[in-house]
Image (cartoon, rainbow, N blue to C red; front, top):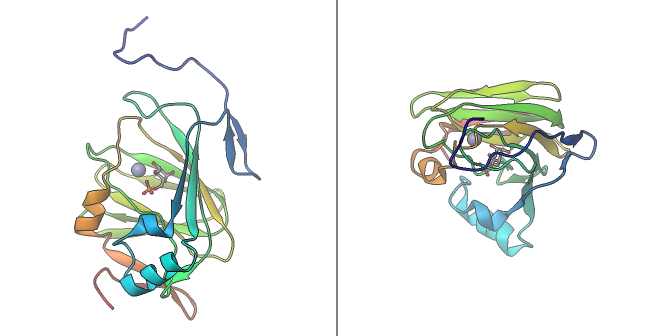
Length: 192
Ligand code: M6P
Ligand code: ZN
């Protein structure tokens, strides 16, 4: 058998409960509150007011036991709560994969979108249950809940992909996703 520098996980089955948006056996769970999204919303005052007003949970990420190490293929389910801060829909922090690897998202529940940015061009993919959004290598990505219900999606990604959050703080994601009169309104990243 091939020898690797990290011990691979054994073949296993993972129970995927679509209604509950869980994976079991379950690995680490990540909960991101409003205070964890500093510097990301367009309106910093509205963000600070939301932090002061109960610091709500914006999204959570549950994972399987497959670790984030090279050659493994971890999975996670992210659930973003519905909401807006100064009209900007609640969203994930967003990240770039430092060594440029691809990723897929599968919409599970609710209505959302996948915003991608390669440093020049931004792309938006509408996500509903059953949609597979493909993130090519080199595209930073953020998920956004544009509906009234929690938005959940399954992610599958290379274990060595990593998460570069500084890239998004520095470069943004090309566009912002705001609540408009007839749904979603796209504005430039620095527009007010
Ligand atoms: C998806 C995957 C994870 C990611 C999560 C939350 O589940 O892309 O790797 O951590 O979304 O996104 P972020 O890391 O940008 O907060
Ligand atoms: Zn990713």
